[in-house]
Length: 455
Image 1 (cartoon, rainbow, N blue to C red):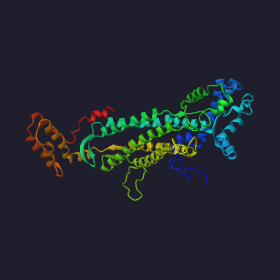
Image 2 (tube, rainbow, N blue to C red):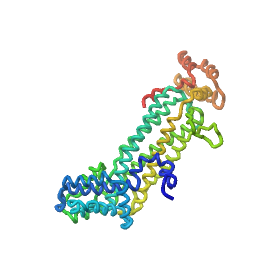
Image 3 (cartoon, rainbow, N blue to C red):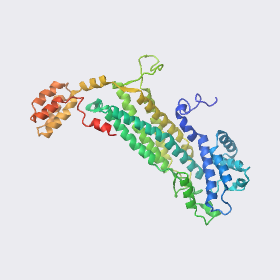
Image 4 (tube, one colour):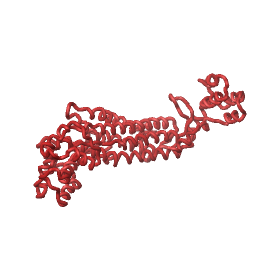
């Protein structure tokens, strides 16, 4: 079979290929090869510009422009050429080096300095920077914009529904009322915190040789300040420099980012499950889409498929992020290759995350509150007013208020009249009795509306 969305093994590149398209230029084999080319080219340019190697003079504007074009014009055909070289070398990074050597062969100035391509580098010098660059771009250009869009949507829903009363449920049972807006505000606030965590992670890089001590660098040019050269190079790429490594950069920064992404996914998974439940209770209706089928046999069905899709994909993403965060910082002695194959699943984890977030976004756009159902549930649960009544009784020093309300309400049907009779007997100021008589489940909302608007 030819590879296509119909025949792809992974649903990220199959069923959901269109929804993961933004990540494909970064986490595909092409994306990794392209970023390796970027690092190799920039390292050659940096070595020439630093002037630390007497035999490598600064490059001319023409030579630098030629190298820049190798980066900016790198395409799929070039990546296929690298893969063809790899078929012989059986080494992916060496194939990139040979590709670049071939590309500069026709440029006299660059051909003369071709031996400085991959100078003093181990493959991991190239790979760690390539992966961090791709992850940084995915975070900044794909993840954070979608995160910001979701946060803005949740904040808007919090304000839109700030005053819409809703019966809360703790342990699945009727509890102190809230508002729809307050519940959306809770999630928006959590999203904002996770967004800050994701954005704040510094992604480190290293450029220090086979076991992290600049051995080859110093053997070739012993008088150069190689740590300073490496630091400037890594930071010019937009990454954070890590001076202390083995052959591999230990991936602690990646692990921190994956933990942060998993935290955001957990918040959205919690939201997806709650909204699924509220739809089941009838608090929300789902807008029907013309032509869409909810069941192959039950024509009436409008299923909460977006939130179910989100929940499933968030679970898969977090399973991968959890493994990545736990595994990547661990390597035997100065290097083993277990991280190499594991890193290649980063795109899958990002892909399932991206698919899930889009599902949440679509699900939020398809729900609308059912005021009648919300009011019906509140009206059927007058028992929730046991809390404010016994709390006011406590304020005025009445004996055993909690036990009094427990005996009156626990496991028994109650309504307005039940509480009115009790309130009339309370030894509290008349103004307080009047305030309690006026209270209903729909108005016992505390500061929910204020909190909803403050997110």
